[in-house]
Amino acid sequence: EDGYWDILKFPNGMAICCCAFRITASITNQYGSDYLYLSGPLNFPTGLFAEIPRAFVNCYTQGAQWAQVQDPTKDTYKVRLFYPEEYPNAVEWPVSVFAIGRWK
Image (cartoon, rainbow, N blue to C red; front, top):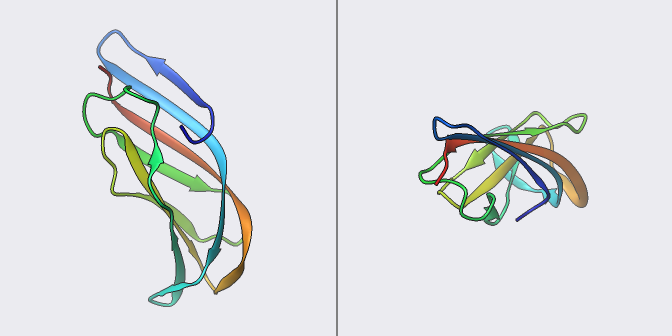
């Protein structure tokens, strides 16, 4: 897994998990009037979800416009970070990921 996940499992079969970690990246791909970074596959907690969960990401660095989860599966996801200008120097971007779905 990427980072440490806090997991809540409910008797009705739903699970909520969250994780905070850092992605080291430069943001250099132009996307409209913004710039974009797309991570490689990252991991949800191993074997937790029975189906693709709803997942949300937050990047709480000053200046980052927004972030989103891309291409989620039961086991993996990618993170897209958007920034208003090109950021060619790789730095650590603090992110939090939240996922809600049915557990096995």
